[in-house]
Amino acid sequence: MRTAPKTVAPVVSPAIKALPEPPDLPPPLPEPAVEEIRLETVLGALSDPLRLRIVRKLLLESERFDHTCGWFGLDRPKSSLTHHFKALREAGITRQRQYGLERRSHVRIADLDARFPGLLDLVADWTPAER
Image (cartoon, rainbow, N blue to C red; front, top):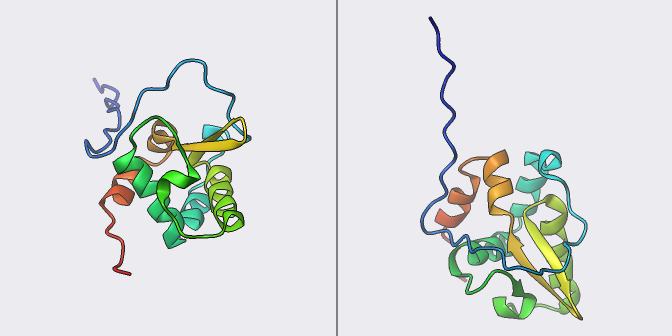
């Protein structure tokens, strides 16, 4: 008698900081549903070194649930940063919420790990090139 294979829940690296979602958050900005997240879109968004650096910093250094653009300490024009954060959100990598005049981001860890197990571990293990 054959038994069905056991499904094992994906395990994210302990280095990744998956912080609990606080209560009373504003609604997220438009983003793809989990089942609509496409690997080629995610990889395309992560192919930009700045966006890869943003996601890695969120995964490894988050001090709270979500962060403003200023937290990253990136010396780029605001319009450029807006473009990069929008690309990450539209790819399904990050979730953004509007808090008054600012937007805060966090990585959709559970959603991405469900769709592409191990991908975030690769991002967390990536070593940025020396500047």
